[in-house]
Each structure stands twice: as structure tokens, then as C-alpha cells.
Image (cartoon, rainbow, N blue to C red; front, side, top):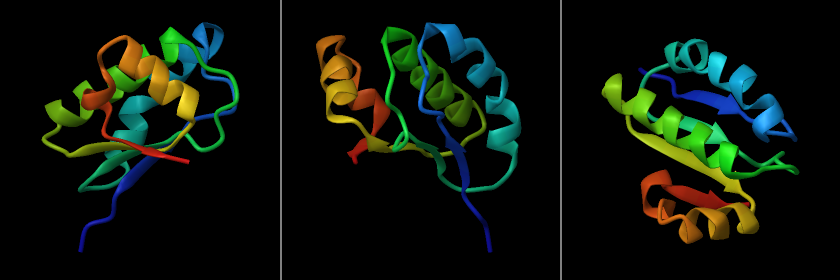
Length: 95
């Protein structure tokens, strides 16, 4: 039986914190099998760096042969992703 890996984003995933969060991706991805989920439900501060971080997580999951999804996505972050034309790449579920 396989367990999914989840990376829970902190309340602030802006440019000031994106590198630190990105550094935690490999460990989070290695914690389970199956779908790699990014939990965005606690996000309060986000920007375009957050989108880049989510796209990096997606690429890492794909490189590992794993499905990818984002859950708990704030509506405004989903709108920002749509504005930049990447919403369909993020497999988001609203909070």
C-alpha cells in the first residue's frame, strides 16, 4: 500500500520565503508514493513567486513519475494562476 506525500505551505509563501520552501521539496517528495500534494490551505500571503514554487513542485513530481495536485488553493491565487496562463498546469482544488 502506498502513501501520498504532502507539502504543506506556510502562511507566507512570497518571494521572501520561496527559496526556503523550494529547498524542502525533495524531502517532501521522497516521503511517500502516489500523488504528490501541495496543501495551500494555510496560505495568506502569496505572489508570483508562489506560482513559480508550485510549478517547480509540479516539475519535481513529474520527474519522479508522480501525479501532482494542489489542494486548499485560495481563490485569488487561482485567479493569479489563470492570469498568467498556468492554472491548468497546477491541478488546483479550492479551499
